[in-house]
Amino acid sequence: MQSELRVINEMVQAESGFIDRIAGEVAKVIVGQHYMVERILVGLLTGGHVLLEGVPGLAKTLTIKTVSDTLRTRFSRIQFTPDLLPADIIGTTIYNPHTGEFSAKHGPIFANLVLADEVNRAPAKVQSALLEAMQERQVTIGDTTYPLPQPFMVMATQNPIEQEGTYPLPEAQLDRFMLMIKVTYPSREEERQIMDRMIATSLPRAEAIIEPEELLRARGVVNQVYLDDKIRDYIVDVVAATRSPKEFGLKGIADFIEYGASPRASIFLAQAARAHAFLKHRGFVIPDDIKSVGPDILRHRIILTYEAEAEEINTEDIIRKLFEQIEVP
Image (cartoon, rainbow, N blue to C red):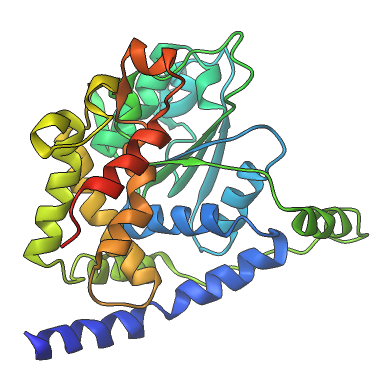
């Protein structure tokens, strides 16, 4: 086992060097927001889709675009609006009067990295078209099904405060996102740096340093990061405790959870923990990896009761108590 761990560690350290280079390139453009950048990288390393939630002006879109600039992949941005149609995303068939034939015109979903900006601005049928592509990694135009390019990842943003005229994603569709990231305000010092950088005569730009093949190879290494049986049991306990808190003896939680996380949460938690270990240049998962990515995996998968709303208890409170009370291996 020790020799196997040593081999995995050496493999991870050899393949994870590009992570620091990406972080360095992103830092040329983005001040702070290390947490958001790290979670986007977790999504890239696992192929999991990411939902970013935060008020306007926190550089959500700019961060996603900057990360995509470091990869030699095709990037596509879709601005979601109430008049958007499914064909505007996946494409449509076009009739050629000269040949009398129909041909497929691919939409912006045919890219490696897709930014769905303000995803809650578009109606349900448009959201469904996007989320079907996210799940199946393919789209159907006319009678033909087309596979999406690899790697493929959707990064969506939404504004939590201006809800008038929006179409909130239902829980079943939120569950398709591996990570839901809460984007917060920068510190005073970071804001001063942001202001100085953005009012300068020329703005910096991140350089492309990673090939798609290198990213796909890194994903293969992430899948080999060692996950001990005790860690696997810990993951299952954490997710199961959201569904049956009384069975795990959790205090002050049971009355506030209407529905817990699905088994998809266990799968995503294991994958994200491996990616987090990879980001730290480590070939094995430790409980701190679970605790670090856990809130981003669980916050959009736990549905609270009316009693929780009345007591002003949110999912962040539930998750914090969950990790405080579940025994760590």
